[in-house]
Length: 579
Ligand code: ASP
Image (cartoon, rainbow, N blue to C red; front, top):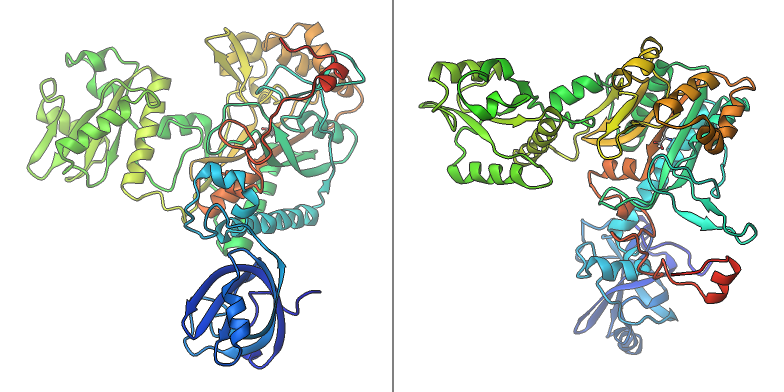
């Protein structure tokens, strides 16, 4: 090794030791007679000291070194006269007697600090420099630790990690596929997998009754902070199980991760049915770190001549504790918030339960007694503010959910170091799409209907519930899965409900349908967004900084400058003609 120690390990007990360190020049300070260099590697930072009095030549040389030079230094560990309790190595410094430049560096385009002066695009362009920053290094270390913990838990519970292919077949369901042209099969394309769903089911047919894989998945979707075109799943499947078995196994995993990584213990995770989650929080991934549950007040408000409420399918509100003193301006801000196109409400009604009585934006239509009756329904106390939206059920719930989260943030109720996991269960099997006028599978087409709802598939498809579940933490969907169909007839029925002809189903999923005829066991599973697990554990929204080489919001790798054009010769070989 070119070094005897790393830059994070020397402590007071090492005083007197002759050491050799390697690392990057992090900072250089010239204080007249003394020059100090902070040398940095993956493990930390150590201070190097050069005294003009003892070795002027070396001190002069040290002063010529630039930021991010790669150095090898030899010296003796000394106790510092002014210690830095904030640094693990802050009690010591190295009195250097030899220094060698292992490689020079150009001046980096941004500072390698937690609070860097580099903008997003610049840092993405020089990602290898960005990765030198402590903050990102910590994120990737967390990711590594979680991956090891996951593998331990899965292994301890008898799961086998099995790899599945990346060059697969394109299917029209789900998100858009990334496709890869095949040179040897002219005019034909592979797709990159959106998930290994069908493969893991085939592994169950093959008898590998407990499978998992930390696996890259690819989806050509519009990007947001919590989405990347390629991302990693912890993908899992089990045979001979019912929903309860899957929930327990993976509740166990999440508890294990919280315990080992954060020292946090949890009781049994709460469970909400999808219907309850939508009714109480307007969302299938509720943030239950705080209450502020929805209260529906159709019965209380209709028939008083206020046409907006009278004509609405749903009138529903939330009670913000201690907010009755909100000013006109603050209320206007909230009204503007709900009217933003992303939130989509047309207006906001308030009832203030003030010290000096009840006041409301609708007191023209409702008597004080009536308003008090409504406030009572919310369990509102003096000092509380009730905020009400009205309109079509689905949209109104979605808008109120945004408002609830916004208020939760404003009121400091969404502490990133508090974790509130829950299961959302009993999702509907199908979802109607107004645009294409057909049903889509809410989870995916391989999800089984609840046995008691199966018959409704033919009569009332919208009412069929599935044994499908999501694990939600702090308003983020960390994972989702279901009990699968393992019977050819049921799978055919499902495709029929989704509007597939028998021929289309056979063309696209024949391999799976056929496999179901060779002894497919009952099975079910789940997949977690691994990048999201990392970001939620760190209390941040963006998954990008938990991925070593992420894409930007346009799906570009700005360092590689990909995607890029390919040569005419390559296009020719692939028999692709660009318009
Ligand atoms: N394959 C599913 C997904 O990617 C998860 C599952 O059902 O196991 O969402």
